[in-house]
Length: 153
Ligand SMILES: [Zn+2]
Image (cartoon, rainbow, N blue to C red; front, side, top):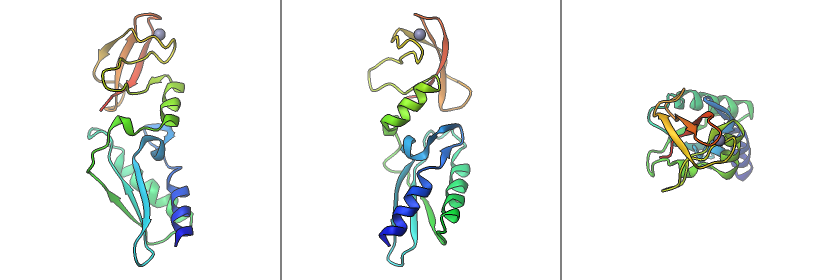
């Protein structure tokens, strides 16, 4: 049973976020856990990120596909709403992948958004709405480049 849980974790942790493909649901902290119930049935627990992100249905389908490919049948995907997801749940690897994509990772409480190009913290928000609900549009006042920032939540 332990082996099945590990196989399931390996399969689902490589599922990408449809809006930020290099980032996996494990990087984002969307994947909360993989367990097996008393009968050996695999239970995958996920949590939605921003309520405006329509990605959860897609993520759930991709998880089911990944499990089927790994030969795990009869699994159940559960959505966990509490505790609520926070941008602090993004892993260090996830934050590095965001910066590599030119997207500023969400700043910690009280911190300012850092320019992903020159790492200046002197930045200004141009628009609360970026290409997706998860991101807002910023501009660096040092290198003057506009960039997207993952919203802190
Ligand atoms: Zn800059």
